[in-house]
Image (cartoon, rainbow, N blue to C red):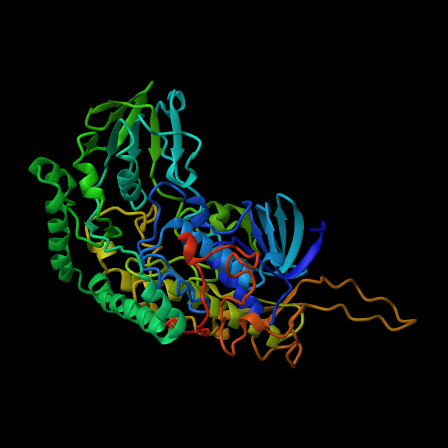
Length: 581
């Protein structure tokens, strides 16, 4: 990358959001873009989280792009290796590698109000971009608690999202801090190998059975040969979850039956009444994310596993002390303490039109317009932004909705023509967030009686979407220009020969609505080319045995059903994600 390279679009991050954005840009005919990735490979959270037992709690056929269906998922709930392999394969199949810049951590982004572009400083140089799409995701930066005495602990310490695979836990005394989605997978995976495992539980989770199984060869064959069977399976998974939403958002009292099922799941494995009491939550199910595991409770019943129903208070040498006074001497500590979700570090690195960082703009709570754009940050948008999270379905559905919005945003810039930016109006951002927060008041996440990572420091739920994925798709289908201010560069007037030079004109910004001054016709986007034939709107993605990089025999990613990873077979056209399109 040259020192002052300029691109039409800069995408930050190469997880599901970043790769999805890259595919959509190519399908829109935009090839003048880069994907900036701080790590040495793509995959996002599915690259970073490689701990033992790591898997998805959303069914495989729903946790994949509608434009890149995978008929060869190995299990109904796929593990981390299969999902990471799927993302690597998407990068290969859609020709994204030439756009991806690995080892390019974004250090700072500044809006240039004179040139109407973003100046981006990375760990490998600087570049500028007309539009920035931030797809860093809320689960990218681990949160480590400040525990007195942690610096003096003589053993091994790491976060679940930064697992140290060089450290052997076999025969060790291990402390697991936290009981979230990662911990309930780690505990069963390492309990048989460690000498003793002590689990520090601040708040017990609600845990439902995870009905995972291997997908049979016959099922995979049907999905390859008869794509409608795959679409029907995805549609059924989607529809069931859409029907569940009203209980979370409007009628939390209906969740009592689900609580009974969760208690029965616990009772099957935990026979000790005292242990069951410690594991039974005091809040309404759904207030925190409902966790899925059929191995967690049996692991807690093992003789070498101890549950401390109290948070970690301090560390004295190699001894961990809980808030209730319980002590445990350990050789290693694994923190499963979540991520910086409502205080994402990337927000400190984005400087907008008023020379304020995004973190400063969001100091009283994150808020955006339709989960995508923020007031004061022209031509900047985020994937998985404020209030786009889900409590019961697949985030890929939300990501694809935001990709629709991104595509129309870029189309509108092209129609407006010339050097132009769209700035979200503060009134539109405020109105959207008032509506979201008003709907949030009745939800289980706000009324269920728990403290969760969905809530920010002010107690506002700025994380979850209080509706169905279908509703969000409709709300983000297109850009409403009435919600934006059109920002243009004022051109200098040429001075006629022999005439006195006029006073210098500040090349600042001229503002106007859609019908204001500026180019009257549409201007093509810089670098626009016909859509990539491998990913065109006509006929769909068609990820097949003859596609680029598919299968190990042609030198591609080597992702196939024979090695237990996610392979992509032939078939499906784009948009076959039933119900969500």
